[in-house]
Length: 221
Image (tube, rainbow, N blue to C red; front, side):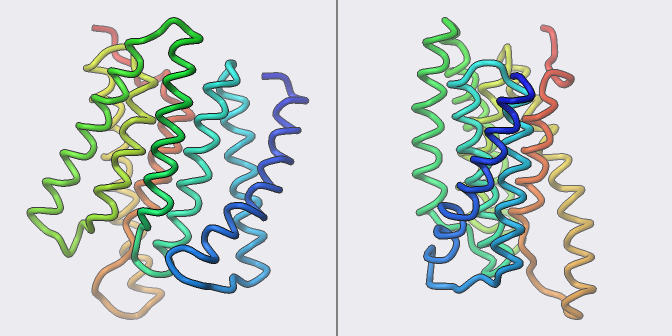
């Protein structure tokens, strides 16, 4: 996209973040009055992510779909940091919107295989985190497992094969786990206590990174 398009979308992202995303985290899953600094941080984060997405992709249907993904990840990260929860009322509407938009994008690009790769990514990411949840539910909440549906589809759709879909998911999961360990240690130092810590933001950051750099991870099979 052109620099002008990126700038315009960034401004729209700031407005959307300050209004829609802030409203979402203020009411879901419970009422919260976010301080001005938090509202500003949400708006800036959303604006930057929207700008990066617009700069990365060239087709508007694809751009719009990943704008939804980015705003959803911002919202769930904020809620998870506050409450150690990832609300279904953000995840599932965002998943539905993303699937619909990427199906339309696949049709417009004559790339029907992308939907199947997206479903493969969804199944792989969900399956891995569900296994983690079964083995150690205190360390991997079911909210993270459900968020994997959105993240896996968004990653898999970018692939050019089932193997690449799996690889993108595994790369994002590996990065997310490393970030989660670092973030968890820092969180415990700041909180001055052990116990649970929000893992969703680390997974979200890793997925954002892989989405914005996915082409370097595609594997020719």
